[in-house]
Amino acid sequence: MSDSPTPAPPLSPAALDTAAREAIELMFFAYRDFTDVADRILEEHDLGRAHHRALYFIGTNGGITVGHLLETLKITKQSLARVLRRLIDNGLVDQKVGSSDRRQRLLLVSKEGEALLEELIDAQRALLVRAFEGADPDSLSGFRGVMLSIMTEEDRQRFQATLSALASRAA
Amino acid sequence: MSDSPTPAPPLSPAALDTAAREAIELMFFAYRDFTDVADRILEEHDLGRAHHRALYFIGTNGGITVGHLLETLKITKQSLARVLRRLIDNGLVDQKVGSSDRRQRLLLVSKEGEALLEELIDAQRALLVRAFEGADPDSLSGFRGVMLSIMTEEDRQRFQATLSALASRAA
DNA sequence: GAAAATATGTCAGGACTGTTGACATAAATC
DNA sequence: GATTTATGTCAACAGTCCTGACATATTTTC
Image (cartoon, each protein chain N blue to C red):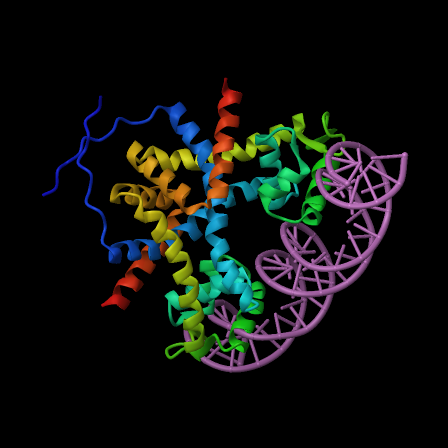
């Protein structure tokens, strides 16, 4: 059993408002600097952020269908097609006909794609680890809780699905 | 004096790594849903995110020069020109010749622009307030600390400058 | 005061990413 | 067999970013 620290009193509505007003800017700057470390790597490979996002979700959800990827990214199939074409042509992503439903094209990251994706994940993870190192575990869980609350319920569920995927991979 | 809660033990490197790996996804989803509430408003006004960003920083730093705005947004003057042209033509932003340096064009949000900017800020602030309400103050400061740590030193200083601007405005 | 530097604006063209609309094919389902 | 579903593709357009080049007004420097 750990000690149960005294919970701090709730913030006043005015204080919440001020914190939220400031957080608008925190979101902008933090996200920009977060994406920037990946952008630098992508540039070397002549790829854009859209390729990064597609590669990321294919890598995290190996064997994902095109339709499911579209729902996750929330873009049109025409937008995805352009991005996917390049990933496939560059040998970063492979397609496999679905076993139960042969209309489906299951997406898989190739060995080469895995290397690039790892590089991208490493860069962003390193930035985040540095940001977390100074903070105590409570800060970290606070960060996590707030980010989850900002997300829509739909995306929260997608995130939960990722956790399961990562956990089963680790096993 | 408040009680000093027992600080939690530091996380293991492996735990930090896992938390950072998960945070990659938190950043993606939270930022997407955060920007989405503004995008819906912008759509009604036939404006894009670039207009939002420019309007935001002009509004927060009234009288900012074009050069300073360029440094803040980290885009080229040609990119900004297109965005600024529309904001000015639509009567959302005004320009004023600099008093000490007459080459400068100081940027100011018009009354109309202020109304739109308030609408945008309100929408994002409301989302964040909802996200904060459930969390205790410690979570909130944890979120803030992590976001600040993710940012570059340069952007952290920009953020601090905003705090001063907001504080002096409130006074 | 002339030359150089600075702040800003603009034209041209290209890349990436998103959209809508239309149409095609193969496979599953009713 | 007809319909629906999963996917792919062609075409056109918009927004946002970039590079490169050039122009103007104003300030600073020599």
